[in-house]
Length: 405
Image 1 (cartoon, rainbow, N blue to C red):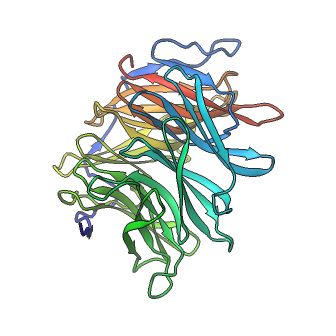
Image 2 (cartoon, rainbow, N blue to C red):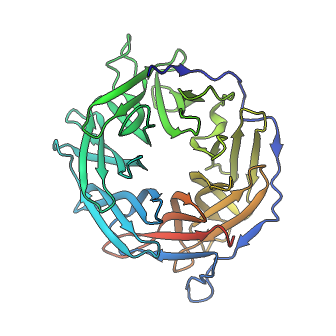
Image 3 (tube, rainbow, N blue to C red):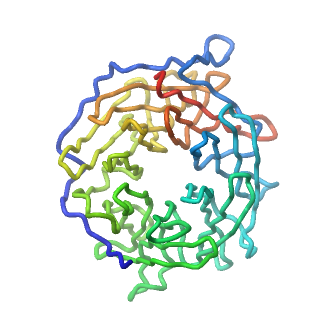
């Protein structure tokens, strides 16, 4: 089926003009460890520091059966490698895989994203050096037992994100990223969105440039309940700095009436009702900006400030099956005895504050949140805590019981 890239129509300087001041009366999950540094645990949350070589988790994926896959970077000697580990619902290891080069022999640049396809495969996206110093995309497909069923490379796209292809498109994934500049009329680097099948062949292929900047990039792609795909497209200057960003949708039952500028944030998620959310953090004044973009006119903007921190970094965004919006990341507390804490802050679909979870590691002084997923009544937040002389950081999984919270 032919699909057109639909430009969204409503221009906004940030997000919605409806500003929500989150009423910070929701539940706070008190997870600061007592003297001695042990994790107090409790029914709402528990933490597992993993005996894992992954020192930089990029994605956590919860399968329908509750098992968990953590995808990230490992080091094989001084060589970066892709690491994938699977755990059961209690955090017991099931299988793991590491690989530093693709089937074509290209070395790893970075691990970027992962998603579950409709057939239950785990598709993992990395960037590889294709031999000329330019990044290409490397996709590895795993079955539920951890067996690699196929690999695929897309040489002319530096991949940033993947989403499961919809049934009318076919098997595989939708790859979002930035092409290598060989397709535009002026050799401009284009935002790229391509259907990649498990056998490496491609289907739908959309490339789009920009009139106002030096390059364009599709940084995030999420499947929408209407059958289309929501894309965050950014225009970049020559140095790679984002000049403007906008939400797009491909196919489905119709466009979503929203358009956002850079303040909308680099994180993107879609709720079960089709509402689109963006988020950003990392400001020196400790702001989180969360925006709801709603076709029915129910959008809002939250400017959430934590007075007990000097900086907030939003690293991940997810929406629960009940419609709660979860923002995960790291904070630098004003308490100088704490280097960093990993946090999840949750908001109801109307923008009101719901609850907060904060964790400072086994020693009570350092934890850094990096990836988040939710399914059913569970959310899993992956991050890092202080390691040892052999490995500077260990992966930690924070299990959150959403029903209890």
